[in-house]
Length: 144
Image (tube, rainbow, N blue to C red):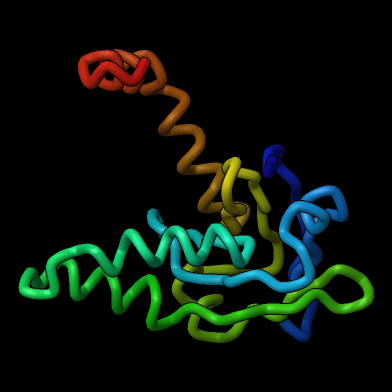
């Protein structure tokens, strides 16, 4: 299970260290893709295959479906971990997520999210203020 929140630096060569406990769950190869809310998603290969299978079920006749597929699948890259457990973050994905020198790597059960540290702090602060409202909305959907 991919859980936890970890703060790391992005080195001058655009590499990000993934914590050893999370790498074990990811396996030897993973897929790095644009995520939602201006973060990146890092999927184990098996989870990526499940995720993209669902995306590809969306109706191609709908512009939103085509756009989502292009953003999520088109910009994705397969990554491997170096001897120190780092991955290289390509420029297009680094720019999309606004990654600077500090990043937050967060386990989300079936994937990791990679956030610019400042963006994550801002997002988290706003979300924490709305926790009760979010729980109530999820309760209306029968999910909480």
